[in-house]
Figure 1: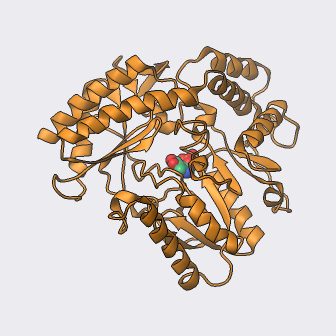
Figure 2 (figure 1 turned 30 degrees about the vertical axis):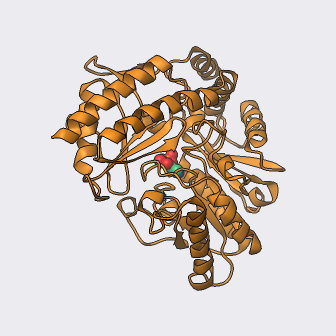
Length: 413
Ligand SMILES: Cc1ncc(COP(=O)(O)O)c(C=O)c1O
């Protein structure tokens, strides 16, 4: 496992959008434990629900009815906008994607999967098999035959010179070509991250996946939206990342933010897809009483406080500030993303050559100044900003000032 920072820190305390390390240093948190702390730290409504549940019952297993699990499933099914949806709870994003891939593969009688170049869908054997990012692919052995499609990463795409509509058409043509040359018989599904997380929040043009889905529908190939990072309003404009594309997926997977720190994830899909698995299949911990009670309180908090519109508003302020900064600094190749999901990619000025030294320095310089951010990018040359969705304007301005100073310092070395 790799730790952040030359001198790694242990975070022991949190409140709102701030955390403290074991030495007592305070940081504004712009990474939320990898996009997990969605509502914020130490939110009384969420902590109280967890405490109340912990005093009553931690775990019973899925052999018994769990009221909070049913209530949460009903809410998520409705929010998903997938018609006649069912929900199956798991414990991590990898496990949710693993379940979704198994359902799609069984339903279609095919182990051929389409995935996006630059993707990351988890660390399990099956999800590694659909991950289009060499530095996160420890093995080529896979239960799937996977074909990787262009389109999710415009900045480094061979089609990057094309304007948006032409770009979409070129990516669609690539998809059609792959279906006729690289797939034999039926393909099971296409799995996408609406905005790619690990590749540094690379963002495809809106509508790309609608154009893809029209092609997939011709062969009844299923569409899986991995909303592990983009769900629950993080992108600001919509509740789910897929909605920017004017489609409804057949299957959606979620994790991270819904638990605000508790381990919970799941799959939502049309009932006939979820019901594909007809043998015995349990998840001992999936949707357990503690996780679902906490997740329900967290989801209610996010909806009642309209964190999605806060993400849109505050995210826009950050985006404007960072885009302004990029005009001064040629080492910033691209500022991208949506809502409170913003990536900054660093390059050698005047080129698109990735510069991972700058992102490494920005990590150190932001930490020194009291701000936690994340790293990413296919070449480790991007910084990721993904604070809790409750970030205030004053906190955003504080973080922006630190980012600006840290980036200016890191790019002048
Ligand atoms: C888009 C996406 N899918 C799946 C996963 C895997 O989730 P987990 O680490 O909870 O297994 C991640 C993790 O970062 C992710 O970003």
